Image 1 (tube, one colour):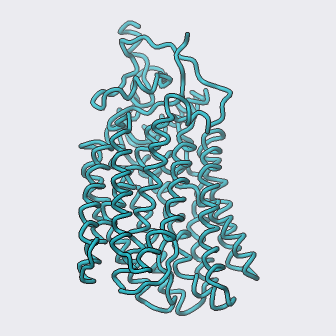
Image 2: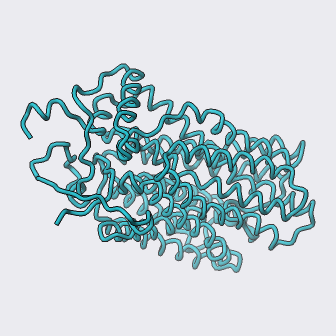
Length: 487
């Protein structure tokens, strides 16, 4: 290809680099963040209503636990399903389905006449909440490569704000009204996602991948106008069918549209999204991501639960998100506030380093720091020191989880991005379900040292996975389709 041809063609990545991050992406950030905010609020509800529902309907501890378990079961299915819908029918159609299911079932659960209906409806809410990877993948596809890590950390703040807001809402509602009001009011953000759905643009990267280049061009033109910048001159093209192992061969090299290497590719077709995740090019990364997400989730929820268990000096059973206590006790809400706020410094640290040192090094550093802060807890420590160490550990554990959530959609091609990151997230949910059965059970039996050693072992396993990842995605252009070389 000669120089004249090169001057009249540009790729999607080059378009985003040219127009930068501006007002248009700011609107995308707010909408995607609203989705994460709604998910966080719904996830935290059972931390506050579990005891109230148990008392009103005279439930057993097993029945109370099932209310939490069914939400996680819904999340497992939803993470895969909505990722599949998003990858095959469009990001916006995924948002519409997510918002409809989560908002309607969330509101209806407030009117549950009995325990069985509440279990079914909360399970459906969980199914609708398996949306985080879809929102993250969509936002990722609008951000220039050079600042992708920073802005992906920024959007994670919406999750923390959601947990804080749910605690504030519960603090206001539960002592004055009842758990039904909390369920109803907590569904408002999901209805907001539904209300503003019409304003959300389709991903130009998805549109181009589906052969709708004119539509992709139209979105990019609107983006450039909103950002008060101009697109590169020429025609939109893409070579993102380049081989993944060639595109990610060097962390310091961003593949350009016009490479001196001649590539001939054939798009893989006729395979399910799941089978493509296990293709020869991706199977190593996929399995390592599953282990990493399982370990990160196990560690994250383990630290939250241990914070409640050890700082209180009690040994009471916990839910997967927070130890359930008396819903009228203000200390429960204060605990959520403080532990959630502890995540903000970790997010700030992640934002500072993720685009400087890369995803793999960032996750390694923060995992090691988590290990260091947990290590003294192998022996019994004073309550104040214990709480401080656990909060510091949570800061960096959450930072690691955040960067992993950036890495997963970056490493997968657009054609299976939401599916791949969704399944990884679903495997992580299993870690969150298993954690209270193991880690907190050890603490309840006065085996604090064993619980901490278990968490430390999980960190070591996670670091091994991070070091074995074949790709560093810092500054890299996103790839669109999974392909094989022509023979």
